[in-house]
Amino acid sequence: MLMLVNCSNCHTPLQLPTGALSVRCAICHAVTLIAEPRGLPPPPSPSSFTHYRPDYPRAPPPGAPSPYNHAPHGPLSSVHGSKRAVICGISYKNSRQELKGCVNDAKCMKYLLVNRFNFPESSILMLTEEEADPYRRPTKSNIRMALYWLVQGCQPGDSLVFHYSGHGSQQRNYTGDEIDGYDETLCPLDFETQGMIVDDEINATIVRPLPLGVKLHAIIDACHSGTVLDLPFLCRMDRNGRYFWEDHRPRTGVWKGTNGGQVISFSGCDDDQTSADTSALSRVTSTGAMTYSFIQAIERGQGTTYGAMLNSMRSIIRSTDGDLMGGGMVTSLLTMLLTGGSGVGLRQEPQLTANETFDVYAMPFSL
Image (cartoon, rainbow, N blue to C red; front, top):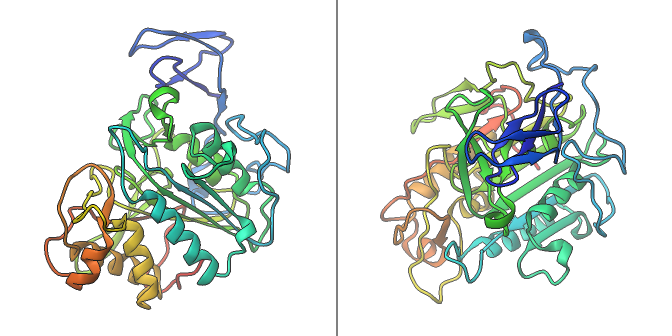
C-alpha cells in the first residue's frame, strides 16, 4: 500500500519507500522521520468509478482513527440527529493575510442551516477565532478533528455540510493524480507554522469513507477552490447555462470517489482563479462573495435545482459591485444591497464538483 508523509520542513507530500523509516524531501532536502502515515486505498476497476463499491472500506466506527490519524482527542460535540455541519470561518486577524468577512460568513451560514434547513444548533460545530474554547479555534489540528467528527458514525439518510471561508492556495503535486499538476489546499489559522490542509487529505477524510445513503455538501469560499475536495467530476458550465462534466479522475487510478454516498461541492472559483476581496467602507459589514451568492440564491427562490443554483450564484457574483483587491474573498454586502446588483462584476466563477455525474437541471437542490 502506498504511504505518504508530509515533509517536516516544507510540508510537501512525499512517498515513503516500503520499509523505510525516513525520507528526504527533494524540494527542501530536509529528512523526515515517519509521521502522519497516509495509506491510500487500492485503485478501483475502471467500471466502478461511479458505482457503489461494497468491497471498499466503510466509514470508521466511532472511536476509530481517521484515515490521517487525527481522531478527536478533545471534547467535541456528540452526534445529534440526521443533520450535522462543520462551519469554519478564518479572518487571520492582525496578520498580513487578514480577511474581513469570513467570520460573518460562518455566522450567516449557521443561521441559514438552522432557520431554513432545520439543522439543530447542537449539530453544528463552529470553528472561528471568536470561540473561547481552544478546540473551536480554526487551527490545522482542530479542523482535522472537526472533519473527522463530521463523518464519524454517519448513517443512511444523514445530511452533512462542510462550510469553509478563508484563504485557499495551491502547491505542486508530485504523485501524478492532478490534471493541472497542483494540489489545492485550505489554509488554517496556523498554516504558516503548521502547514496547509491538502485536498488529498480532505478527500480521504470526508469523501472516501462516506457510506451509501449519506449526502455531503461542501460550500468552500476560498481562492483556488474548484476541486479542493478532489472529486472525480467537475461541471464545466458556460454563461448560457450549457454544461458538460469534466473528468478529473487521476490517471494513476487512485480512488477519489465515495463508499456509496453522494458528495456535491460548491466552490468560490476555479482552481486557477482567486476570489475577490472587496469592501467599500470600513464600517460596512462584509461577507464572502461566494457565501453571499449561495445564500442569496436560496433566499430568492432560485435554488430549485443544482443547475439553477449554480447559474444564480454566478449571476449574482457577476453583478456585484465593489473595490476589487484580488487575493481574498470578501465583498461589501451593503454595496450589493444598495446597487441592486449593478456595477463591476467580480472576476470569479463558482464551480460545482461531484463524486458522480447527474443532470444538474433535473436533480432538486436540498441540504
